[in-house]
Length: 235
Ligand SMILES: [Zn+2]
Image 1 (tube, rainbow, N blue to C red):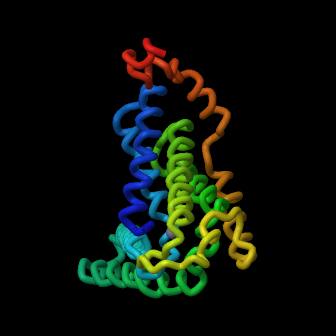
Image 2 (image 1 turned 180 degrees about the vertical axis):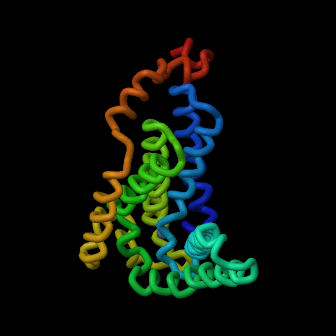
């Protein structure tokens, strides 16, 4: 069944192969190859943040809460005393972790819009924009990270579809077809919101023609890079 472990290992198996091939073909550094694998694995668990009691959901909102608390703390470090800063940061964390988490789950439903192909594209475009704006990646790196995020996300949707079993392991045949859909027609406002976020995030991504030129400049012959010579010589 496509539970949390299946999603982690399924995504890891496919994206690590993709990342290894990219590393060899483009002569990337080890850090770049590892970052691509991590992006793909995060993509592989991300769709299940729409399930309230899931590990991805709790981890995401704990992470967001920590970032928000630290941002608030550093922005106010001159204005307050140590005790006030500590209490304020904890309050910010708790607000994100509980009321915001609760609000998010009151508007999303499991295997709704976040289990769709358009959401997979949104995740990739957001990853690409974040890498370009915040991580000091170059054009090609930022797009590769986005593509790997989408790849991991799609693997999640395929695994859900293959198993048609819900997160807790209960067989729900009627869920078949609910993971792999282009859009969620039952949730049109949510679908429009996802398209809107994707289009806005697109403006923050790196120029893709520059990324393509970098790809072409780095690309080497795939045969010696990927296939061992003892196989290649016998073909
Ligand atoms: Zn899922």
